[in-house]
Each structure stands twice: as C-alpha cells, then as structure tokens.
Image 1 (cartoon, rainbow, N blue to C red):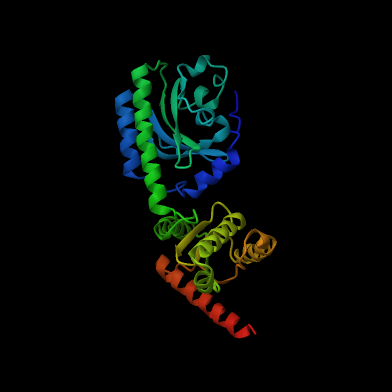
Image 2: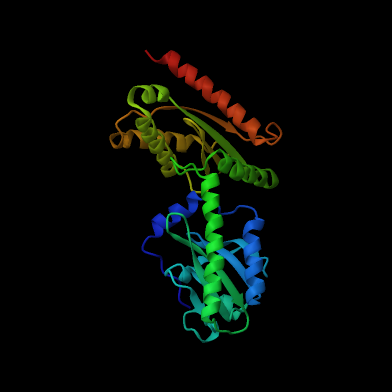
Length: 320
C-alpha cells in the first residue's frame, strides 16, 4: 500500500481548511443534495464530500455508508488532493498503490474510485467529491465533466460557508460562525460530560487608535490580535470575532484549561510586538462552562463578558 504523501503547501492548506470551521459540523442538506445527486447520476454504492485533515479524512456529506471518517494514511482522497485533475482508479485490486489497502481488502471493498479535488476560496485543495463502488468501471469524458460540475457546486457551498461564517478582515469566525460552532461544541460537552471554558476578550484603548491613527491602523491591530489567538490556541478551539474589538475563544478539555494559553498569549504578544506599530493590550474574562447554570451560549457569553468588564475596570483603576 502506498501512503499518500503530503502536498507541498500542506501547512497553509491545513490552516485554510481549519479557518473554514467546517470540520466536525453537523450534516447539511445543501451538501447532501449534491452527494445524493452524484450517487444517483453515477449509480455508485458510495458518494462522499471528504475533507482531508492532518491525520484523517472526515466526511462532511456521505451516501451509502455510516462511517464518518477514516485514517488519512489509507485514504484514496489523500492521493486525490495532490493534483488538480480527477483521480480515477478503475480497479483498485489491480493498482499497486491500493491493492493491499484495507479499504480494498476489507469493507467497503473498494474497486472503483473517482475523486475530484475541492478547492476552497483561497485555492487550496481541501478534499474531494468522490465516487466509490465495489465493481470496477471506467469514466467517460462526459462522466468526468459531470463530476467536475458537481464538485463546482460543492465549492460554491464551501464559498458560501466562508462568506457567511468567516470574518473577512481577521479570517476567524464571525459572530454567526462562532455561534454555530460553539453551540455544537457545548452540546457535545453536555452529552459527554467534557469540560469547557470561554475566554472573552476586549482590546484596551482600541477606540483611541481608530480616532488618532485612522481605521486602517485599527484594522491592523484587529488582524494582528486575531492571528495571535490562532497561533496561541489549538485548532480544535473555537475562535471568533463577535464584532468591533471583541473576540472569544471556546476551549474544551480539562477544567482550568485557559490559564496556560492566556499566559502564553501575553508572552507571544510581547515577542511579536515588533510586528506592529501599535501596542496591543486587552482585558479578558474566562468562565468555566456549567451545564446547570449556562443553559444557553448567550448566558455563558454574558457571564464571561461581565468578568471581562470587571477586569477592564480594575486595570483602568490600577494604571497611573
């Protein structure tokens, strides 16, 4: 079996994929309509919208299987994202790259595979729309064109996701995108008993930067702070800009988890101070998620906002 090599742009590709905040999100009919159509048009057992993460391929939409993800090292899609052209494997049993792959020798016993790379709004190949069947077959030119057209429909939906849920200036989740991810994450934490914590940030002195230096300077500060958050916190954490100079991060894992990242954030900001002309400072309120007390995301945000404001007042009083 040949493991798929990493693309040359792997680091940037993963960063772009994660910025979409689409991994591990619920099923959506707008994607399922496309995979249902593709399954019907090509008469295949399985059709997937597969997104290739660092060590797995995760299925945003799936027809013909209940499996949600598989290891990247055995994935066909890991090979498909290496090139702009559609990867067609007419008979995997006779292909040395895949003949002893467990997806071929065991269920779902893949013989035929066709995967068309999905390009994201930045041009990175983040996954595929793929067709899978236990019977060998060939693709005609007409088939290839049809699969490409269906993949373009998937790309349109990914673009809509980006426009609707990503803050254009900072490239982190906007309010709508954060609420979507955070509600899903809190629901999971409630169901599994996993701890979660919300950190609510407000930039100190931001209005004075806008007033004195102009909005371009303010935008630079917002972009810089957003990138500090992205570099400091885990890709699994939900990072968002609620509006203006307010940012939030929802972490899940063990209790008291925000302490170390918040200290690391201040250290990183000090180290990166030379990257920006203006001083970047902030107040933050961190709240442990309590399912009994926080029945909604809004109640958790309100408590974290209140704690952040208390810290901001304390910092003002303490400053000379």
